[in-house]
Structure formats: C-alpha cells, structure tokens
Length: 157
Image: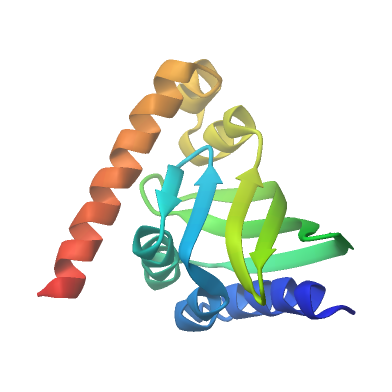
C-alpha cells in the first residue's frame, strides 16, 4: 500500500472510530471538500463538517474498499450505515470518493453518491418524491450549512 493509499485507509478507519481530529489531520489546511449534501466546503469548514458528523453520529459504521492510487489521486468506495437523526430512519449510503494530494496531505476530496437514493432512505416518502430534484439539493445544502454554522459558533464559545 502506497503512502497515499495508507492515508485514505487511515481516514476511513478514523471515521469508523468517530475520530474527527485524526481525519482532519490528514487534510491540507486549504483542503476543498465537495459532496451532494454539503456542496463545497474549504479549509477549516471542511474539517468542522467531519467534527460535526462524528459528534452527532448514531448507530454508525463505515466500510472502505477498493483503495487505488492513480498518480496524485486516490479513488475508493466507502459505505456508511447510520441512523439519520432527523427521521430516525436507517441509511446505507454508498459513496465514491476521490482524493487529491499536495505532498502527504489531502488538498481535494470529492464524495459522490446518489442523493435521491439517500433521500428515500433518510426521509421516506418525501425523499422519494423530491430527493432527485435540484430544489431539494439546494434546500438540503442550505440546511447543512446552517447546521455547520451553528456547530462552528458552538466551537468558538
């Protein structure tokens, strides 16, 4: 396993252990993270997202497989199993992740998953109806940004 592949493996091992500080330590200070639920977060905001997710996780586990390096990029598949706090519903999310490195730190991390599939699991019928729309995605990103802002304010106080 290459050093970059090892870093990605360590990232998901830390996530499974809900160790946000270990996860964040693998990120470059200017990291850019993107996914369907949060949109794009940069630097400290990306790290705080993982801190928030780890702090609020319920019935959580992560499995990572197929880590493969291609030049400066590492690709992997990971699966998250958890209870979505807003609805109490179980979610099994399947994610494709791409990591780009600057030196030994992650500078760009992109997670891709089927938002409609996630919404059906997390929200039930409402997710089934609206989870595939850009309107839903924009609303979800607005909510996640509000939650992250509140979490960051609590960190500072």
